[in-house]
Amino acid sequence: MSDADWYDPKTQAEATLEVMKLGAKAQSLIADFLAKNASEGAAPAYDPLNISSAFMDLSAKMMSDPSKLAEAQMQMWGDYMKLWQSTSMKMMGQEAAPVIEAHKGDKRFKSDDWRDNQIFDFIKQSYLLTSKYVSEAVENTDGLSEKDKAKTEFYTKQFLDAVSPTNFVLTNPDVLKATMEEKGQNLIRGLENIIEDLERGKGQLSIKMTDLDAFEVGRNIAVTPGDVVFENRMFQLIQYKAQTKDVFEIPILFLPPWINKFYILDLSEKKSLIRWLVEQGFTVYCVSWVNPDGSYKDVSFEDYMKEGALEAIAQVRKHAKVEQLHIVGYCIAGTLLAATLAYLSAKGEADQIKSATFFTAQVDFEDAGELQIFVDEEQIDAIDQSMASKGYLDASSMATTFNLLRSNDLIWSFVVNNYLLGKDPFPFDLLYWNADSTRMPRAMHGYYLKNFYLENNLVKPGKIILDGIPIDLSKIKTDIYVQAGKEDHIAPFHSVYKMPEHFSGDTRFILAGSGHIAGVVNPPSAQKYQYWTHDKHEPNPDQWLEKAEEHPGSWWPDWQDWLTDRSGDKVKARKVSKSLEAAPGSYVKVKG
Image 1 (cartoon, rainbow, N blue to C red):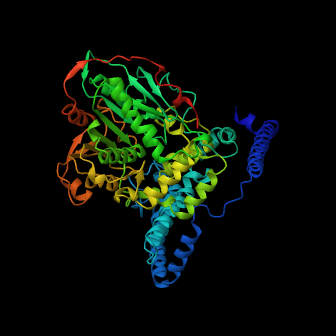
Image 2 (image 1 turned 135 degrees about the vertical axis):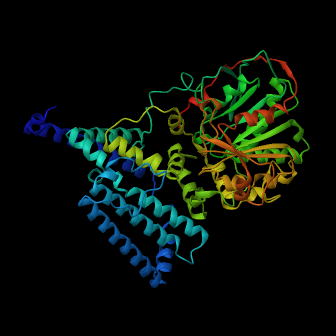
């Protein structure tokens, strides 16, 4: 389209009509959504996140010390004067050092215009200064409870992230440039993307993070050859086909988190931990959890142990014809694994487990990080009420919570890309998996939040009773391998580090670079990140890291060596005795 075409009244009228149609469609979607909620009897929840009382307390505490506020305001105005002076010098062609710069890892201001254009440089620095002083004012307020302090700091950050100049057309140089070059077509495409996301979310905005048509489970992800060898109402058990003539005697069983699908462990041929282990000569089994519907509303944490973990252990022993196995628990399944090991220890049956490995899992939730912000009595009650009619927590609700922990990367970057620049997101297998979330049964979810996050009962001997057995982690004498992620926002390093303190067996702790997912899914061939080891358990994690040795690349070979020492002799590769269906099975294909 030429400039002449763009300024033609007919073209303008057609563009206006297109936007009006899109707007009407959006209105209709939202109206349908509101009507649906009303028909289901969903009363509008007042402050379901229990934020208002925390911010009212914050305001009262701030006003009780006006001298501190005045001092902060004077410092802020002093920095603003420096910014005005710096900007004036740049406009006159002189060199001037920035008053404030974005953090090294902040990807929002990577465009050269944020540095080279005086106006956008001023906008950027003005925003960063304001964010700094607002954050510090909240952080330095005395007298708040620890819970309220964490809550106000978190939601202040959410607000500041939302009002970043990068998120608006007129204050983002990349968006302005695209709008001028494309004569506004980027914004029309962006509006179309919003409509599409509203339709997919049935009236709620479901931001598309990747090309959802680029991947298919069983076609180009979750493709390691295997067979479903057992299933019940809770899970399907997959046995992966041997890739070597001989295999280690002791097989490996994976318990993945049921918050997401299991194929994070079998993401693609090059990123698959399962495929890599099979190629190293291990027999690998993996649980593929059911994606529960309303009929699972009363399924409990105990059911996940009895019909899940314990049944899977029994089936692996049966199919592999072994007395012992290695077992791996990832995230919430690691918490389940710890409870299961304590249960087996109390019954004198722990010798079934040769070793246990924990990926980014927690048993001590005292320092469980930012997720604790979402857990108090009021919020648990609100979540439980929201699940009352359906019997489960929607997959989208859980996904939104996790996305908020990294809102700039997992929310606002896509708002800019999809809605302001009008671009389609790139195909990315990890983000496809992230969007393929699962539902959570009402009973299990409430029990988990209350007993672990809220009351931290798992590390209190006898406070949790499963199938009539009091759980005591100190009774666990199994060999343990613990992996944590240095930048993990979901299971923080400082929290995971406490795990060996609650067990009685031999424990190896390693810290991997990156976070909850990339810290685990890091194949040696990628040559990315690093990991740290130190044989002594120091009094606190910072001391441990200070003394730890850093190793480049993946931690997988370290784990392989540890497993090999405990895996017995080589035996002839195992074959599947009876296949119910080919991997990855049918349970994993049920959408949330």
